[in-house]
Amino acid sequence: MTAILLTGARPLGGDPTDVLLADGVVAALGADARTHDAARDARVVDADGLVLLPGLVDLHTHLREPGREDAETVASGTRAAALGGFTAVHAMANTTPTQDTAGVVEQVWRLGRDAGHADVHPVGAVTVGLEGERLAELQAMARSAARVRVFSDDGKCVHDPVVMRRALEYVKAFDGVVAQHAQEPRLTAGAQMHEGVVSAELGLTGWPAVAEEAIVARDVLLAEHVGSRLHVLHLSTAGSVEIVRWAKARGIDVTAEVTPHHLVLTDELVRGYDPRYKVNPPLRTAQDVEAVRAGLADGTIDTVGTDHAPHAREDKDCEWAAAAFGMTGLETALSVVQQVMVDTGRFTWADVARVMSAAPARIGRLDGQGRPIAVGEPANLTLVDPTARRVVVPEQQATASVNSPFAGTELPGRVVATFLRGRATVLDGALVEPGVPA
Ligand SMILES: NC(=O)N[C@@H](CC(=O)O)C(=O)O
Ligand SMILES: [Zn+2]
Ligand SMILES: [Zn+2]
Image (cartoon, rainbow, N blue to C red; front, side):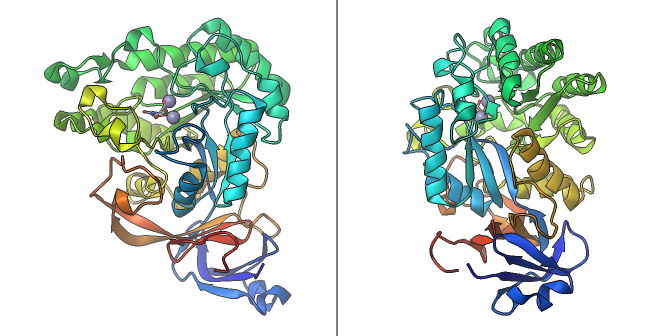
């Protein structure tokens, strides 16, 4: 593999420097980069003015394979990941068949390895078939080649407190984490959107904030009781932020995630009945959006997870009530975070690296991802042009689905290059297929 010399890159948005990638690692930084042996026949990439970040890590991606290859495959989803600046994604368990056995998680892990665009870490289901009744073979998934550490019934809530308690107890044996989709099912039966002023005006069945907050509150208490690790997926309400803040102050081992869409979109958008805005949990109010931004800024919320949820056209091109919940996000996540957190002065690029790389890698217990940009570290890196602007055109994205809530809108920032263990997966903003010399 040829070495790569990035000239004039700004690590974490700091001062420009040269960075040499060789043998899969960061081989040299600064003045040493050009004089290093491996620099002689290195390919030079002009990174003048570009921000260099550790490769992004997503804790929450739906790749849809096996089962819904018409909406996404491991290959198409990881192409989208690489183009979005990601070097690792966690693939959610709500596939068909469900990722609830060692066999299925190994299959997904192998598909990711063979595609070669980004590391794929399958999430294991908490319960068999996501049915919420019997625990899946968590230990066998943890010990499989896929080395599962994150367990979730995402799409569904582990609503039975006894099952949740057992799962939290069980994953301690292999340092796993239970990632909860916090949605009290009885309080959200038939729900179509956030319960509030807009749902009342439209006459749509509401999904109240308390249906999320009640589960978050219960689960932090359960995690404390059994001394285990809890991750709250796609937290969306001001009340949930307060509960997590309280739990952390109390020393409870809880981490929380917010999606890009909950950082910027509100339930006002539902007025147009465009199913692209139908998602779980639903888009909330402007007050909730401000609360999740503040929670991300003060560290209450640990990570931004995309909840990339591709859906086939037939499942989205229909009336609001019949449409599937979910929106794509891998190729726009970094731009949204730049827009709402960096360009507003709430975040430095180091903060972006913390919430989109270091924290998710730590929560998922990944090796070699989310590491600092330093000599000897694996060369999982992303180069971003923060001055670029682009209009989102879903048909031109690598994801196989077009259900982006940002279609037609202009967003800041562009991923120029992504490197996976020193190999370019994206260069000049275009995908580089593995095995093809860049
Ligand atoms: N977020 C969604 O609205 N949908 C997700 C499931 C989930 O994340 O709960 C999906 O799998 O489509
Ligand atoms: Zn979910
Ligand atoms: Zn999800």
